[in-house]
Length: 269
Length: 311
Image (tube, rainbow over all chains, first blue to last red):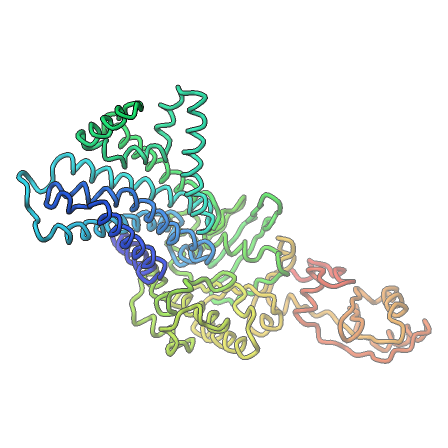
């Protein structure tokens, strides 16, 4: 328990005093506020529980990306500065050093959840309880769960890339390049082999697209989207049961954590 | 019980055998100099002892502990710094020490004490990236002292320092030694090591080529510095001199190691060969001479028997 406290304390000290951390959080806050307000935001459903969708929608699209960038900025430079090696010399094992970064992911996720929530609550504040029912409806709760899983997916991918690449610039480049390339490659291959589409749906970037889509959580949004697509003569969207993409994304989270752990154990610092 | 004990410790990287079956024993209270040219495997050896590099073969013990879990506990009794001082550039010196102290389980008071010892208390709040190299080295020393360790491992602590900085570092090392600490000092500043250390190991291309007390390594060999008009002729004559065990060049002239201390006989021999010396003087053999002989770092070196220096 003492060790857990030490790991959290040192990681928070490293993060809180890092200017790049505040810059990333600041940019996210601004982008999130702009996206929330420009999309009509929670004000279009001016009270809870209806406001949740407008709060989470911009956050689920922006938050995971910013979280990943921040985790890479906080983890990867430790190899270049050789502070990872010094932490181990000072008394941590390589595994403990790695788990410290995993622990850091938790408060960082909390921050990325808190910022859009505060922005949304401030906008809804004049009329917090307009509709009936509870403060959070089941569909909103699922959307929140999807947001957490999306944050975990990108956050752990960032941890894995940091452990593998050990350089912030290259890590950020690799993360975003993969995200872009996966979509281009799968779209090109899908034209030739349509049967592969079902497999591609479970690749990390595609999966992220699925779990961030509002239609997965709100049937009326899906119905509206499909009505519009039908009018345009496009194929209707069909989503799997909610738990399938969430479990698949969670499996990636475990895989990314495992790969990073094995890499940290095996490689010299 | 030895503080450090390595047995056939080996590290092979894909392209190079960095450490080749190194066996060392460092006893409590020793100031142990670990010498070798750049790339000889010193830092890799220390890296293995500190748990940041996995050995390919062989084993080591710290304070008698050899198993991974025991080693983690044993490392709590060690203070170490490897190569350049490794700190967070955006954090102040004091905050950097706070991180090391938290890992070591040390309180704030000790941080101030250590900053005081290395003369950085006044600069503790400034960012590490603004420090001069000397200040960075001193902060590294402060970090190693935090847990009042029984063993202090310093890898090139005087690297890049000016003479004043070197003196400061040397004084701190002596201060620690006076407090009964065991010090494992890797360096290629030989005169520093000769002045500071009680025991020495010399490594070359990953292998230990000599180990013992400084006196044993330096040895009782008699050497003389000789200068004459024609260096090539002089070298050929010296190499043919029956009493000469090795000949090598130095800044002062040719250094010849002799089996006896009869310099007059050498002078007679050279005169007999038609060589009239402009300078012939007995020379105190230094650690640098022994190092050069053992590591072959100088032309003409390497004839000295390795076993002569072994303890």
